[in-house]
Length: 345
Image (cartoon, rainbow, N blue to C red):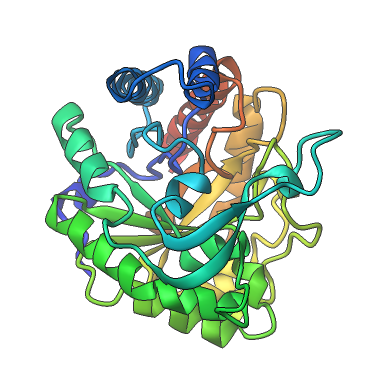
Protein backbone atom coordinates (compact mmCIF):
# COMPACT_ATOMS: atom_id res chain seq x y z
CA UNK A 1 0.00 0.00 0.00
CA UNK A 2 1.56 3.27 -1.07
CA UNK A 3 0.93 6.64 0.50
CA UNK A 4 1.82 8.99 -2.31
CA UNK A 5 3.80 12.21 -2.03
CA UNK A 6 0.85 14.05 -0.50
CA UNK A 7 0.94 11.93 2.63
CA UNK A 8 4.57 12.80 3.26
CA UNK A 9 3.68 16.48 2.94
CA UNK A 10 0.95 16.43 5.59
CA UNK A 11 1.63 18.42 8.77
CA UNK A 12 1.87 16.79 12.16
CA UNK A 13 -1.62 15.94 13.46
CA UNK A 14 -3.36 16.46 10.11
CA UNK A 15 -7.09 17.08 10.05
CA UNK A 16 -9.43 15.34 7.64
CA UNK A 17 -13.00 15.27 6.47
CA UNK A 18 -14.71 11.94 7.09
CA UNK A 19 -16.67 12.49 3.90
CA UNK A 20 -20.12 14.02 4.12
CA UNK A 21 -20.57 17.75 4.66
CA UNK A 22 -23.45 19.68 6.16
CA UNK A 23 -26.28 20.01 3.68
CA UNK A 24 -27.28 23.60 2.73
CA UNK A 25 -30.95 24.34 3.33
CA UNK A 26 -31.76 24.70 -0.37
CA UNK A 27 -30.54 21.14 -1.03
CA UNK A 28 -33.39 19.89 1.16
CA UNK A 29 -35.75 21.85 -1.09
CA UNK A 30 -34.07 20.26 -4.11
CA UNK A 31 -34.69 16.80 -2.66
CA UNK A 32 -38.37 17.62 -2.27
CA UNK A 33 -38.48 18.90 -5.85
CA UNK A 34 -36.85 15.70 -7.10
CA UNK A 35 -39.43 13.58 -5.25
CA UNK A 36 -42.21 15.66 -6.81
CA UNK A 37 -40.59 15.44 -10.28
CA UNK A 38 -40.37 19.25 -10.59
CA UNK A 39 -36.74 19.29 -11.78
CA UNK A 40 -34.81 17.67 -14.59
CA UNK A 41 -31.52 15.84 -14.63
CA UNK A 42 -29.57 18.92 -15.71
CA UNK A 43 -31.10 20.94 -12.87
CA UNK A 44 -30.10 18.31 -10.36
CA UNK A 45 -26.53 18.04 -11.63
CA UNK A 46 -26.05 21.82 -11.56
CA UNK A 47 -27.43 22.08 -8.03
CA UNK A 48 -25.32 19.23 -6.70
CA UNK A 49 -22.16 20.66 -8.25
CA UNK A 50 -22.95 23.95 -6.53
CA UNK A 51 -23.43 22.10 -3.23
CA UNK A 52 -20.14 20.25 -3.68
CA UNK A 53 -18.33 23.51 -4.35
CA UNK A 54 -19.77 24.99 -1.16
CA UNK A 55 -18.76 21.93 0.85
CA UNK A 56 -15.25 21.99 -0.55
CA UNK A 57 -14.94 25.73 0.07
CA UNK A 58 -16.11 25.33 3.67
CA UNK A 59 -13.51 22.62 4.33
CA UNK A 60 -10.70 24.59 2.73
CA UNK A 61 -11.70 27.83 4.49
CA UNK A 62 -11.74 26.04 7.85
CA UNK A 63 -8.27 24.67 7.11
CA UNK A 64 -8.84 20.93 6.81
CA UNK A 65 -5.74 19.20 5.46
CA UNK A 66 -7.67 16.37 3.76
CA UNK A 67 -10.94 17.39 2.13
CA UNK A 68 -13.81 15.81 0.21
CA UNK A 69 -16.67 16.83 -2.07
CA UNK A 70 -19.01 16.58 0.90
CA UNK A 71 -20.56 13.51 -0.77
CA UNK A 72 -23.02 15.97 -2.29
CA UNK A 73 -23.40 13.92 -5.45
CA UNK A 74 -25.01 11.20 -3.33
CA UNK A 75 -28.68 11.74 -2.70
CA UNK A 76 -28.57 9.70 0.48
CA UNK A 77 -25.93 7.70 2.31
CA UNK A 78 -27.84 4.44 1.74
CA UNK A 79 -30.03 4.77 -1.32
CA UNK A 80 -27.23 6.27 -3.43
CA UNK A 81 -25.43 2.93 -3.17
CA UNK A 82 -28.40 0.59 -3.19
CA UNK A 83 -29.98 2.17 -6.26
CA UNK A 84 -26.89 1.08 -8.19
CA UNK A 85 -27.29 -2.55 -7.15
CA UNK A 86 -29.43 -4.70 -9.44
CA UNK A 87 -31.62 -7.36 -7.83
CA UNK A 88 -33.21 -5.22 -5.10
CA UNK A 89 -36.68 -3.85 -4.53
CA UNK A 90 -37.37 -1.06 -2.05
CA UNK A 91 -39.55 -1.83 0.97
CA UNK A 92 -42.02 0.41 2.75
CA UNK A 93 -40.86 1.73 6.12
CA UNK A 94 -42.67 0.05 9.01
CA UNK A 95 -42.72 3.25 11.09
CA UNK A 96 -43.48 6.74 9.78
CA UNK A 97 -44.71 8.49 12.92
CA UNK A 98 -42.60 10.01 15.66
CA UNK A 99 -38.98 11.07 15.87
CA UNK A 100 -36.96 10.05 12.78
CA UNK A 101 -34.75 7.03 13.38
CA UNK A 102 -32.89 4.32 11.45
CA UNK A 103 -36.09 2.25 11.27
CA UNK A 104 -37.63 4.94 9.06
CA UNK A 105 -34.99 4.89 6.34
CA UNK A 106 -35.34 2.96 3.10
CA UNK A 107 -34.71 -0.77 3.21
CA UNK A 108 -34.54 -3.36 0.45
CA UNK A 109 -35.20 -7.02 -0.36
CA UNK A 110 -33.29 -9.27 -2.73
CA UNK A 111 -35.34 -10.68 -5.57
CA UNK A 112 -32.42 -12.05 -7.59
CA UNK A 113 -28.65 -12.39 -7.36
CA UNK A 114 -27.07 -8.99 -6.76
CA UNK A 115 -24.89 -7.28 -9.36
CA UNK A 116 -23.46 -3.76 -9.74
CA UNK A 117 -23.06 -3.48 -13.52
CA UNK A 118 -22.26 0.23 -13.71
CA UNK A 119 -20.24 0.64 -10.52
CA UNK A 120 -20.87 2.92 -7.55
CA UNK A 121 -19.91 6.25 -9.12
CA UNK A 122 -16.60 6.92 -7.36
CA UNK A 123 -14.71 7.53 -10.60
CA UNK A 124 -16.86 10.57 -11.35
CA UNK A 125 -16.32 11.94 -7.85
CA UNK A 126 -12.56 11.51 -8.16
CA UNK A 127 -12.53 13.35 -11.46
CA UNK A 128 -14.54 16.24 -10.01
CA UNK A 129 -12.27 16.55 -6.97
CA UNK A 130 -9.10 16.49 -9.05
CA UNK A 131 -10.51 19.31 -11.16
CA UNK A 132 -11.50 21.47 -8.17
CA UNK A 133 -8.86 21.13 -5.45
CA UNK A 134 -5.12 20.77 -5.06
CA UNK A 135 -5.46 19.42 -1.52
CA UNK A 136 -5.37 15.75 -0.61
CA UNK A 137 -8.87 14.33 -0.65
CA UNK A 138 -10.61 11.28 0.71
CA UNK A 139 -12.91 9.16 -1.45
CA UNK A 140 -15.27 7.09 0.70
CA UNK A 141 -17.33 4.01 -0.17
CA UNK A 142 -19.97 2.31 1.95
CA UNK A 143 -18.77 -1.15 2.92
CA UNK A 144 -20.59 -4.30 1.77
CA UNK A 145 -21.52 -5.11 5.35
CA UNK A 146 -23.11 -1.70 5.84
CA UNK A 147 -24.94 -2.08 2.54
CA UNK A 148 -26.17 -5.49 3.70
CA UNK A 149 -27.46 -3.93 6.93
CA UNK A 150 -30.44 -2.54 5.00
CA UNK A 151 -31.04 -5.55 2.77
CA UNK A 152 -33.36 -8.48 3.45
CA UNK A 153 -31.99 -11.55 1.68
CA UNK A 154 -35.47 -12.74 0.74
CA UNK A 155 -35.33 -16.18 -0.87
CA UNK A 156 -31.94 -15.42 -2.45
CA UNK A 157 -29.51 -15.07 0.48
CA UNK A 158 -29.56 -16.63 3.91
CA UNK A 159 -27.63 -14.04 5.91
CA UNK A 160 -26.27 -10.51 5.95
CA UNK A 161 -22.76 -11.93 5.58
CA UNK A 162 -23.75 -13.81 2.43
CA UNK A 163 -25.15 -10.60 0.94
CA UNK A 164 -21.96 -8.73 1.82
CA UNK A 165 -19.71 -11.36 0.25
CA UNK A 166 -21.71 -11.15 -2.98
CA UNK A 167 -20.86 -7.44 -3.24
CA UNK A 168 -17.11 -7.83 -2.62
CA UNK A 169 -16.02 -8.19 -6.29
CA UNK A 170 -17.93 -5.07 -7.31
CA UNK A 171 -16.47 -3.08 -4.43
CA UNK A 172 -12.93 -4.21 -5.16
CA UNK A 173 -13.36 -3.26 -8.82
CA UNK A 174 -14.77 0.13 -7.81
CA UNK A 175 -11.83 0.92 -5.54
CA UNK A 176 -9.32 -0.10 -8.20
CA UNK A 177 -11.11 2.10 -10.75
CA UNK A 178 -11.12 5.06 -8.33
CA UNK A 179 -7.37 4.70 -7.81
CA UNK A 180 -6.79 4.45 -11.56
CA UNK A 181 -8.76 7.71 -11.90
CA UNK A 182 -6.43 9.44 -9.43
CA UNK A 183 -7.66 8.69 -5.91
CA UNK A 184 -4.76 8.48 -3.48
CA UNK A 185 -6.82 7.83 -0.34
CA UNK A 186 -9.84 5.52 -0.27
CA UNK A 187 -11.92 4.96 2.83
CA UNK A 188 -14.42 2.32 3.88
CA UNK A 189 -17.39 3.69 5.82
CA UNK A 190 -18.20 0.86 8.22
CA UNK A 191 -20.81 1.82 10.85
CA UNK A 192 -22.15 -1.76 10.84
CA UNK A 193 -19.02 -3.70 11.80
CA UNK A 194 -20.88 -4.95 14.87
CA UNK A 195 -23.14 -7.04 12.62
CA UNK A 196 -20.38 -9.66 12.63
CA UNK A 197 -19.54 -9.30 16.31
CA UNK A 198 -19.81 -13.09 16.65
CA UNK A 199 -17.10 -13.58 14.03
CA UNK A 200 -14.71 -10.66 13.63
CA UNK A 201 -12.32 -12.97 11.77
CA UNK A 202 -14.85 -13.02 8.94
CA UNK A 203 -15.28 -9.25 9.10
CA UNK A 204 -11.49 -8.81 8.72
CA UNK A 205 -11.34 -11.29 5.81
CA UNK A 206 -14.28 -9.53 4.14
CA UNK A 207 -12.55 -6.15 4.39
CA UNK A 208 -9.21 -7.47 3.21
CA UNK A 209 -10.77 -9.05 0.13
CA UNK A 210 -12.43 -5.75 -0.73
CA UNK A 211 -9.12 -3.85 -0.70
CA UNK A 212 -6.92 -6.57 -2.24
CA UNK A 213 -4.64 -5.06 -4.85
CA UNK A 214 -5.83 -1.48 -4.21
CA UNK A 215 -2.70 0.68 -4.47
CA UNK A 216 -3.61 3.68 -2.32
CA UNK A 217 -3.75 4.80 1.28
CA UNK A 218 -6.58 2.68 2.67
CA UNK A 219 -8.73 3.81 5.57
CA UNK A 220 -11.60 2.28 7.46
CA UNK A 221 -14.09 4.46 9.31
CA UNK A 222 -15.52 2.59 12.29
CA UNK A 223 -18.48 4.30 13.92
CA UNK A 224 -21.90 3.45 15.29
CA UNK A 225 -24.16 5.29 12.88
CA UNK A 226 -25.40 8.89 12.89
CA UNK A 227 -28.87 9.03 11.35
CA UNK A 228 -30.49 12.24 12.62
CA UNK A 229 -27.67 12.53 15.13
CA UNK A 230 -28.31 9.17 16.80
CA UNK A 231 -26.38 5.93 16.87
CA UNK A 232 -27.75 2.80 15.22
CA UNK A 233 -26.81 0.61 18.18
CA UNK A 234 -26.93 1.11 21.93
CA UNK A 235 -23.71 -0.85 22.52
CA UNK A 236 -21.06 1.64 21.42
CA UNK A 237 -17.88 -0.21 22.34
CA UNK A 238 -14.98 -1.16 20.12
CA UNK A 239 -13.02 -3.24 22.62
CA UNK A 240 -14.07 -6.61 21.21
CA UNK A 241 -12.86 -5.57 17.75
CA UNK A 242 -9.60 -4.01 18.96
CA UNK A 243 -7.53 -7.24 18.93
CA UNK A 244 -8.35 -7.61 15.21
CA UNK A 245 -7.22 -4.14 14.12
CA UNK A 246 -3.72 -5.33 13.27
CA UNK A 247 -5.12 -7.90 10.83
CA UNK A 248 -7.01 -5.28 8.82
CA UNK A 249 -5.12 -4.35 5.64
CA UNK A 250 -5.74 -0.68 6.36
CA UNK A 251 -3.25 2.14 6.75
CA UNK A 252 -5.62 4.46 8.61
CA UNK A 253 -8.23 3.41 11.16
CA UNK A 254 -10.82 5.99 12.17
CA UNK A 255 -12.54 5.50 15.53
CA UNK A 256 -15.34 7.58 17.06
CA UNK A 257 -14.18 8.94 20.43
CA UNK A 258 -15.63 12.39 21.16
CA UNK A 259 -19.28 11.34 21.52
CA UNK A 260 -18.20 8.51 23.82
CA UNK A 261 -16.29 10.72 26.28
CA UNK A 262 -12.98 9.46 24.82
CA UNK A 263 -13.84 5.99 26.13
CA UNK A 264 -11.46 3.16 25.09
CA UNK A 265 -8.80 5.55 23.76
CA UNK A 266 -6.06 3.67 25.62
CA UNK A 267 -6.74 0.51 23.56
CA UNK A 268 -4.68 1.93 20.71
CA UNK A 269 -1.44 1.61 22.67
CA UNK A 270 -1.89 -2.16 22.80
CA UNK A 271 -3.53 -2.85 19.45
CA UNK A 272 -2.68 0.02 17.07
CA UNK A 273 0.75 -1.18 16.03
CA UNK A 274 2.25 0.83 13.16
CA UNK A 275 -1.08 1.95 11.75
CA UNK A 276 -2.34 5.52 11.77
CA UNK A 277 -5.20 6.36 14.13
CA UNK A 278 -7.58 8.93 12.70
CA UNK A 279 -9.36 9.87 15.91
CA UNK A 280 -12.82 11.35 16.10
CA UNK A 281 -12.35 14.36 18.39
CA UNK A 282 -15.41 16.38 17.29
CA UNK A 283 -18.83 15.22 18.49
CA UNK A 284 -21.05 15.48 15.42
CA UNK A 285 -24.03 14.35 17.51
CA UNK A 286 -23.57 17.24 19.95
CA UNK A 287 -25.71 20.27 19.13
CA UNK A 288 -23.19 22.92 20.12
CA UNK A 289 -19.70 23.82 18.92
CA UNK A 290 -17.02 21.83 20.71
CA UNK A 291 -14.85 24.41 22.56
CA UNK A 292 -11.34 24.66 21.15
CA UNK A 293 -9.70 23.89 24.49
CA UNK A 294 -11.97 20.86 24.98
CA UNK A 295 -10.89 19.50 21.60
CA UNK A 296 -7.25 20.26 22.38
CA UNK A 297 -7.52 18.29 25.62
CA UNK A 298 -9.06 15.36 23.73
CA UNK A 299 -6.02 15.40 21.45
CA UNK A 300 -3.62 15.54 24.41
CA UNK A 301 -5.45 12.58 25.95
CA UNK A 302 -4.87 10.54 22.80
CA UNK A 303 -1.18 11.51 22.67
CA UNK A 304 -0.63 9.68 25.94
CA UNK A 305 -1.12 6.46 23.98
CA UNK A 306 -0.53 7.35 20.31
CA UNK A 307 2.77 8.63 18.83
CA UNK A 308 2.23 12.08 17.25
CA UNK A 309 3.34 10.82 13.85
CA UNK A 310 0.60 8.18 13.89
CA UNK A 311 -2.29 10.46 14.86
CA UNK A 312 -4.72 12.13 12.46
CA UNK A 313 -7.75 14.12 13.63
CA UNK A 314 -11.33 14.21 12.39
CA UNK A 315 -14.94 14.51 13.48
CA UNK A 316 -16.57 11.35 14.81
CA UNK A 317 -18.54 10.96 11.58
CA UNK A 318 -19.63 13.01 8.60
CA UNK A 319 -21.61 16.25 8.95
CA UNK A 320 -24.61 15.27 6.81
CA UNK A 321 -26.86 15.30 9.88
CA UNK A 322 -25.49 18.63 11.20
CA UNK A 323 -26.69 22.17 10.47
CA UNK A 324 -24.20 23.98 8.26
CA UNK A 325 -23.53 26.84 10.68
CA UNK A 326 -22.80 24.33 13.42
CA UNK A 327 -20.57 22.22 11.16
CA UNK A 328 -18.54 25.30 10.24
CA UNK A 329 -17.95 26.03 13.91
CA UNK A 330 -16.98 22.46 14.63
CA UNK A 331 -14.49 22.28 11.74
CA UNK A 332 -12.94 25.59 12.81
CA UNK A 333 -12.64 24.28 16.35
CA UNK A 334 -10.95 21.12 15.08
CA UNK A 335 -8.30 22.93 13.09
CA UNK A 336 -7.67 25.51 15.83
CA UNK A 337 -7.19 22.80 18.45
CA UNK A 338 -4.88 20.84 16.17
CA UNK A 339 -2.76 23.97 15.67
CA UNK A 340 -2.51 24.54 19.42
CA UNK A 341 -1.38 21.01 20.21
CA UNK A 342 0.90 20.92 17.17
CA UNK A 343 2.63 23.95 18.60
CA UNK A 344 3.13 22.18 21.92
CA UNK A 345 4.97 19.22 20.41
